[in-house]
Image (cartoon, rainbow, N blue to C red; front, side, top):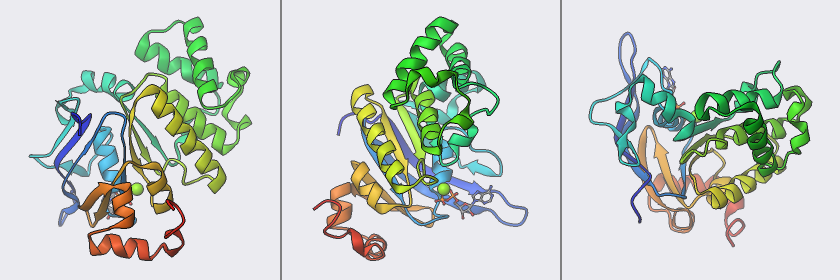
Length: 267
Ligand code: ADP
Ligand code: MG
């Protein structure tokens, strides 16, 4: 594997409680190569979102990242960034799309204004420059640029999610963290969006950390997959190997609970 873009090393995260601490992420290590899609799978509560938030530096108390943990992006430890560096890091280096991201659009602002906000703040673009970039990004996610003057409620859920993805990609991040990005949408729309993301990834070259509880989507969409159980990463391998020759008992059990996939997805 080439030099990784993202290297997570011995990541340990506790939720600090009054009585006891809860270890949500336990000594997790994995790498994501440039342009690669790495998936994190595992049942609800196993620590996937906690990892996603830590990588994006969006974790908040009571989450506490333990000493000895490292999150290296292009060789720099994300955990060492100060507030000023963080502002640049967010959006420009790492963008995060989560399940309810489509609801994070401001309902009283036109789509155009929401792009402008980000493009002015981070790239110092003028209105004219921003309008041009907005049109380009909307085209990339299959939305007619003429609609940039519309308000969020004038779009369907799937379109709003694609708009958020377009805003996230407008600054050219190296890594896009997607935590259940399409779970709130119907199956057909989910697949359309993921296909689009995949095309964009090939074109723009960013890496993706992809989180979903949908193993079928996972295997189709990811190059490599890590399987989590109770805060630990118990197995990681290529999507093919995880699917065809799972090693860990838990991975085998996960597949057994999705019998319809066998012989279907990758056949
Ligand atoms: P996943 O995304 O895999 O469903 P999470 O990362 O959201 O899992 O949660 C991992 C564990 O940490 C769960 O057991 C959850 O209950 C716990 N947890 C998450 N957020 C908090 C919090 N703010 N305070 C205490 N415990 C939390
Ligand atoms: Mg989650």
